[in-house]
Image 1 (cartoon, rainbow, N blue to C red):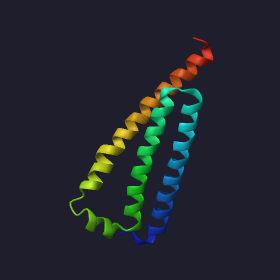
Image 2 (image 1 turned 90 degrees about the vertical axis):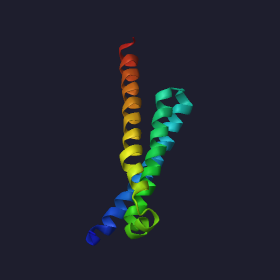
Image 3 (image 1 turned 30 degrees about the horizontal axis):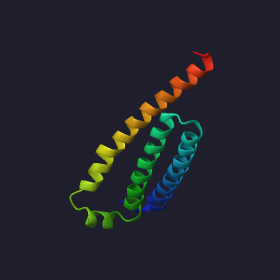
Amino acid sequence: MYAQFYVVRLFVAIILVLGDLYLIGLWTFAFLRSGKKFFLVLAICAAGAVFLGIINAAFAYDVEGMRRLDPSNTLYGAVFFVLQPFFFLLAIIAQTMFVKWALRKETGS
């Protein structure tokens, strides 16, 4: 299955996990410094994204091993059809809160 893209898939999966780890640190730092709840929500989203990224990396590293581990694709289905949309929606909510706060702060309202 797309053996020629194995290294690319694995590289992208690792970059995504590292980027999400950075975002956990960034949003946690922002929450601890400001106390704003949307930063905490964004940190939770980043933590969820790390979990999803690890599952993605496991599939990218060893698709056949993951198929043996999860022959009915329950884990795959739960991650990509339930958790990923959930964390995406949570991130949209938090980022909307952030923009509202930033605009309110800028206009002085």
